[in-house]
Length: 116
Image (tube, rainbow, N blue to C red; front, side, top):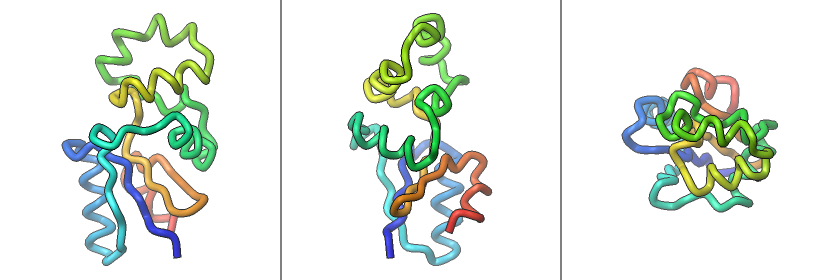
């Protein structure tokens, strides 16, 4: 059985809700704070493929980092957006929940219900 991993920012309310839901259901999982253990380009690319998403679809558009870079980001290719997300973790929407060859963006947290 594949281990569940939550890629999170610990101060994020949605991330905490997802972790709490797993804990309350007795589901074993691990948390990865991607600010301490940053995404590699290949890992983020793999998660995007599992979620069937493009980098531009995973951007945190309400974040100040995005707002400050919006005009630049709009001119970038998907691969360049991916590079920017690796360099600026605030640009990555969260939490991402992964189990084996499946991953979802658990926003809103209720999305985890149908996953496993």
